[in-house]
Length: 287
Image (cartoon, rainbow, N blue to C red):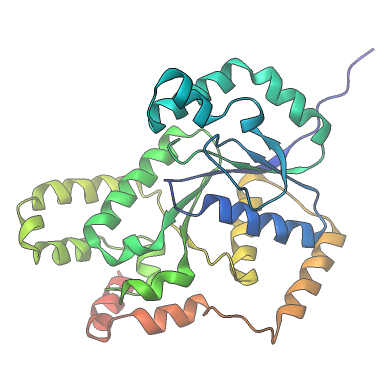
């Protein structure tokens, strides 16, 4: 007798550097998905996560804890985290047993920050050309090494106003347009002027692959979460039913007139685009 084919599982592996907002993203996305009517299971794979703000279906700290490993083996945070990940890999049967009863759920895997596919990058890097080029290199390397459908997010868009004006329109950063303009900004810095050739090579590498782009995320904004979810569903082929579509329409219509404390992406663009650089940005958009 033929055995039934395993059901297809859908979900997101949420990765990114420490402090980029992965856990907050999992909280906001899980609440949004539950409001749509999806059965959600958040899986914490970060043994350093304490005081989780979301309801956790599976928690790796039940298997191994970072603090216990550091104390027992006299390891630092990075060495302890690597040991925890290797221990989890050696005990995948434990994880499979935990996930088995959750078949049919939509998974959110909250991964450790040091691991290098929703990839979050703090939006404040847009305000520093040198850091933004580094972020582009990191994002490109992650996309090439993680064998999963992949989207990049500029997180904490609600806080970008604290970092000052952007040199260019927000679309310049999300779509990763002509990076030669960033090189010109770097050339005005005495420190970076000594590394112009290096920066030119890095920019050329990024543009040759032409893979990196970003979606801006304000986890407090339902419209922003919806755009991210649409990109994720498109990337992994998830198709939702009529009921979820109705829930989404009801949720978004109820949000009209609600008291949101955060500006839309368009508003952010208008407020933080330096007026003196508008003509330069318009030229970049034409290119």
